[in-house]
Amino acid sequence: MRQVRPSSETEAPLLSRVRRAGLLVLLVVAATVAQTLPGTPALKIGGAVSNPLSLTVGDLKGMPRKILQVTNAHEKKEETYEGVSLELLLQKAGAPNGSSFVDR
Image (cartoon, rainbow, N blue to C red; front, side, top):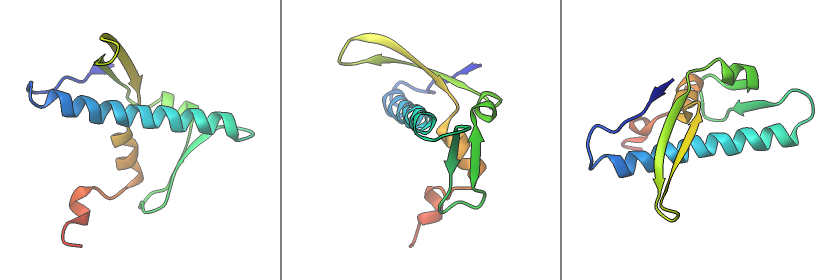
């Protein structure tokens, strides 16, 4: 497992929030799917993507994981998040990125 570190101090706060948000979204979606669907839980990524995905817990366990350590500004303590990057999942699904929306 590799730890994500920002390349500069000015980049740190924004990247930390973005990465943290991405990991949290993934964790919340996965937990919701696991609790609401009968049978084998799956994370489904569809819509405006070129390669819709349906990923099981086993699929997610086999993917590269990232560890993110942040300081909770409200509680003044270190927190660690671990999971599959939302960015990686969206890339695998062929989701459009920011450059796809320029001049629209």
